[in-house]
Length: 193
Image 1 (cartoon, rainbow, N blue to C red):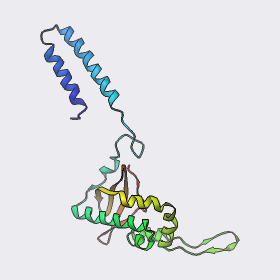
Image 2 (cartoon, rainbow, N blue to C red; image 1 turned 135 degrees about the horizontal axis):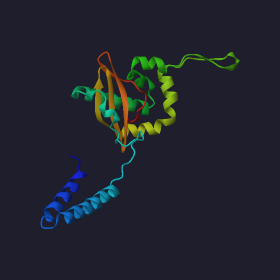
Image 3 (tube, rainbow, N blue to C red; image 1 turned 45 degrees about the horizontal axis):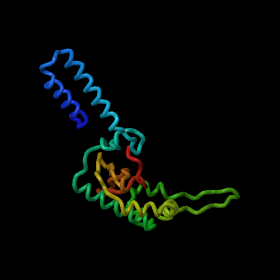
Image 4 (cartoon, rainbow, N blue to C red; image 1 turned 180 degrees about the vertical axis):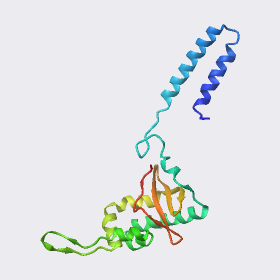
């Protein structure tokens, strides 16, 4: 039972016990007035706030994903996420790429690009592409590395979802089990939900 309803129930039961000697109509009107006042007080005290994805579920959308991870999966995923954030904060694209799912690494590496005038820009490797993308936000990544707390990990087949906290912000990041080891599936954490 939700704690919000307990004071209301106690109030209603107390009103019924105290009013035993009074007439039925007095009891009904008294209890009705008291319960209305209690509900109004509670509604004034409780003001739900929107969570990171704009609804009121306190960021629990992703908590229904899969199943709770085993202790070993939690340890492995936590170690992976910490190493990954340390690598991107240190601008070490080679390590960050080695911790990333191989399909994502292929996607990250940019192919040759033709621009106006027929000039061809060379293909970027995964470390070069990560450095180019993460360099503008390296301070934010350093903060995240230092503030990172892995709250929980959920698993469905070979996909994992880690719920992370950075200070007061709760986010998630997707993982993928590749050849028996967890790898980063999404390059950055996203809003929970």
